[in-house]
Length: 198
Image (cartoon, rainbow, N blue to C red; front, side, top):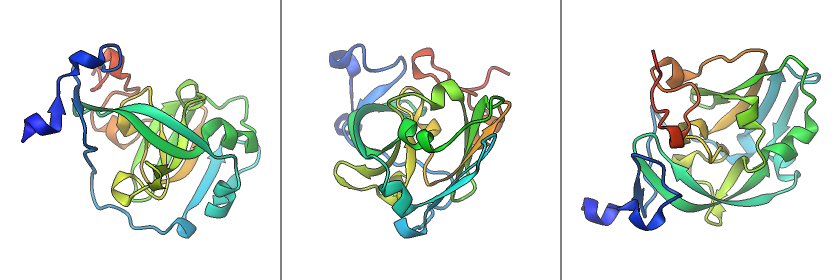
């Protein structure tokens, strides 16, 4: 069975971080129950160290410029999937609606279901990052974080928060759920930043 599920990364040198194995499928790993939300129920709050807090509805998000992204996806549990095709709103396009206070240094991502994870601004404000609502041309399935998830391709996938509902900008780094429970505060797959140093 595993021979059909995973394959050696030898033919994809340069795209697969150390310690990872390629998969053709797209495994689903979730902590706790999977939230069940209709797109029209989604509200994305943007608050904290911002000049004017925002709350965006689904229609607001769909009214922003829409972009396609093909990116590799690296799970901390040691599998990678190449060329995953997403569609959604680029973080930088969303952030054109937001004026950060000068003190903002990090963002805490809040998710339906109570999950959180953290990113430094330099990791959040990258041109490839996407608020995804579509996977391979279909509405993003619940199990993969639908209706809305963040995609941060350069970090391990737990930083690509599923079921996104809030962006809380902070003047300091505040650890999220997995980081408090032993995962690395940043999660760079090329440095194998899987677990905290302490």
